Image (cartoon, one colour):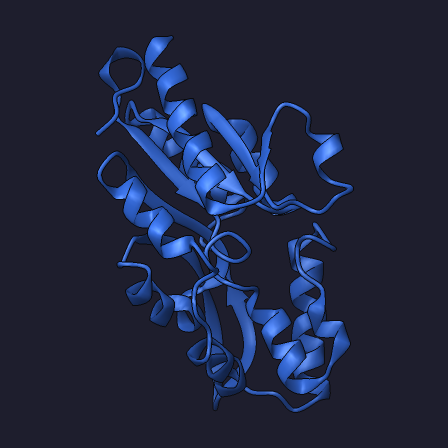
Length: 212
C-alpha cells in the first residue's frame, strides 16, 4: 500500500460507467433504437430529472428490468480497464462509487475482480422499475468525506458532471475522458484519456500526497 500524509493509506475511488464499463443506458438505446435513452449524466447533471425521464421511457416503450439486465449480460469492461485495476490492487485499496444500481451492475463486478461497490437500489415489481432508492443524496462526495474521516487519503476519478463533487472533495481528483466542453470548466483536475494514463496519474497523485 502507498502511504499518504501522516501514514494514511491512499484509497482510490472510481466511477463505474464510462470509466470501467460502458454506459448501460446507451447500451439499451443501441439495442432498442430509442435515441432518448442515450442521455446520461454527461448530458444532464440533474440525476433525479434524468431518472424520471428514463422511467417514463421504459413505460412508454414497455421495457422491463430484464431488458436492461440483458444489456449488462452482453457487456465487457472497457479496453484496458481490467489490467488497470490489476495494476492498482497491489498499491491501493479500491472502491467503486456509482450512480448505477446493484440489481443491474453486480454481474459486472466478477469480471472486474469484485472491487467494493457502493451504489443505489431499484424498486421492482413484476419485472418493471417502479422507482429507485438512492443510498444517500450526493452519495459519492459523502462516501469520500466518510473515508477521509477514517484517516484515508482519497484519490478519485470520474468522467461526468455527477462526479465533480466527489473529485472536489477528494485529496486528488482526475477526469477520465470527460466531454470536451466539461474539462475547461474544471482546470484544477488532471484530464486523462486512457487507462494507462489514469494509472500513471493516480500513482503520481499518491506520490504527491506522500510528500505533503
